[in-house]
Image (cartoon, rainbow, N blue to C red):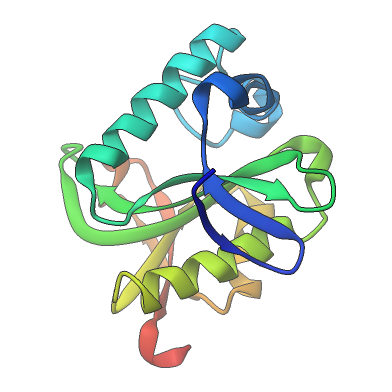
Length: 181
């Protein structure tokens, strides 16, 4: 099952497209969850979700640099409650930059339970301790107040607005330096 790490309540593991597509669709098929994610969402059906999981997991397997997109699994129920990422940020021309971001997407039924903060804290530790990243960023749409609150609970410093990433979309930029952890 390829567990990346565990926290008190959560397991962070690889997605298994054949097995996880239905639960992933509960996340990425929900327009309220995907509202801040940009083009290509929400997923129209479970098969489309399965294909998306296959593409994304294959892309990170090919990169083989420790970055990725993992399932957040509640230990008690073994239910997938969301996704956590650490990856290189795409620049305005969608070519990757040398900057790395942490991000999270949670199933609507699991909003407000602290899972994004718990998984985010674990992913930051992974990025600093395993990937040896000196700085990790988060980029958030200005109207996404819930994700802004998560960055604050993670101790990330607000830098201001940027249009350096994701095709020039204006986003709020947060950062955490490894020296501050």
